[in-house]
Length: 128
Image (cartoon, rainbow, N blue to C red; front, side, top):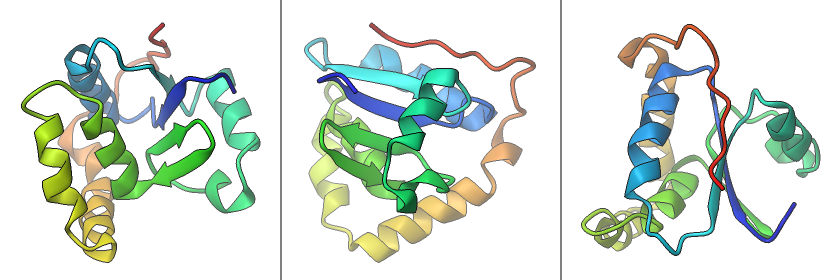
């Protein structure tokens, strides 16, 4: 993996895809962040290099160079890299205990496919 931070997301999930599409233009200009679909060849290769405990997760994965964040922590790492006013919300959510944050994240994730239909084709693209 390069020195860039990477966000691995479910490219086959319409809700996840729309969140990425919403997030991408709102990232700070100096953010060194790459969004990669878990369904892409590159995404699959990256997941295969992760410790076993992360390889079977059905979650957003944020790779911060040498550290792995999953579930709500991955979402908050993305939020922290966004422009005003989004980034200012990050500390407010970090103070919520991890089990509560992850419970909310998992509940949303369970029904994510009902929020938006899946795209007709997987849009696998990356930011440079």
